[in-house]
Image (cartoon, rainbow, N blue to C red; front, side, top):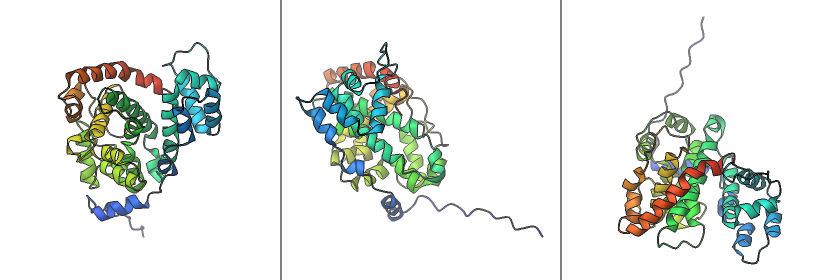
Length: 309
């Protein structure tokens, strides 16, 4: 007698109710790096009296940060004739702002990479984080062309964390996360529609709910939730708008994130985004500054990030 053929149970009806989505997000581990986002190194690089040797001493305590620092300074982007193996030299070449950006990003990435389990670990995490780092750098450049006057790291962190919902999704909804990477979409907004159809929330809302647990600033939470549609943000639209533009520019320059098969972004497509209208619709001078910053920084990002992760 042949054994009965076992068929897998049908997947749960989608979308999930809000209560189940919240329960699964709550079950994801909290991250120490998000709760203490400003480390001792941040204080050092903000000080006018800090020596490179002092910064190097702090960096040496973090092997992951040290590795990323040396990979970045030795990338094709910097075009140095000799290889840099000294942390003090790397600090000199990179400058304090990029050191601080790496210091913010490294512990977050290291911890978030530990969240996915099982088959979800096969998803393209390196591509996701390369895209996120590039978006962080570009969001800062874009907002620097506005009169907003950001004097902390909010601009950088909104770009870095805008896709954190995809990491949480892989942890809380692994089957749906694997199915989503095979669904083509015309643009990032359309892909968010696939997420809502399968799960009930898109990655922006999932990420924002996760970050609320870590008591991050309202500006960051709103930017993460509404970056697919910054016009819908009830407040802090500028941050959500900058991330939306950065996301599209980064995609245009080949750093797609790897999670969604989205149609390639055409040059200057971001000029028709709601985010562009929010930031620059009434300010022609600021729009020109932003376009110049994008033209200067966008094509350089793949080289700067080469080998960083």
